[in-house]
Length: 133
Image (cartoon, rainbow, N blue to C red; front, side, top):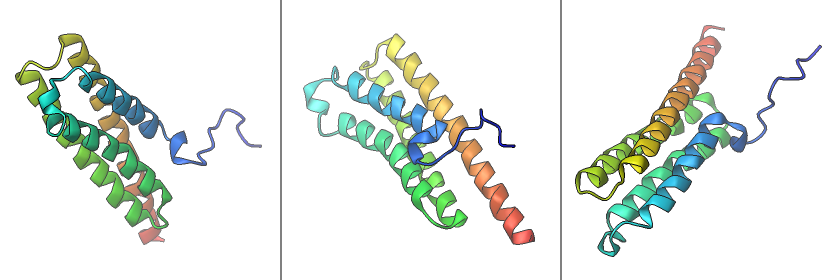
């Protein structure tokens, strides 16, 4: 008998990493609204692009057919997340981020990173199991 509490993952939006990452994207968009106007085509744009790249790569990886392709896109998401972390530090260091916003972004990037690493590890485990069969 099937566990009725088991979550069926039918779409990338069912992935916890995508859900937390999506919250991160929304926070980035809201927080960067208050950045100076002269940052519109530099730091604001970079932060928005790198944050949305995280969830976009998770989504694209989910849609790929092979496990190796999936993990490749999950690693790209991890790279984009690292890029975003750097941009958050820059925004902090130039005085664009309030301490409360900084703490929210740090928590969301850390949570997204842990979930992403878990997804990568699980996918690689499946790759190794398939190669041993």
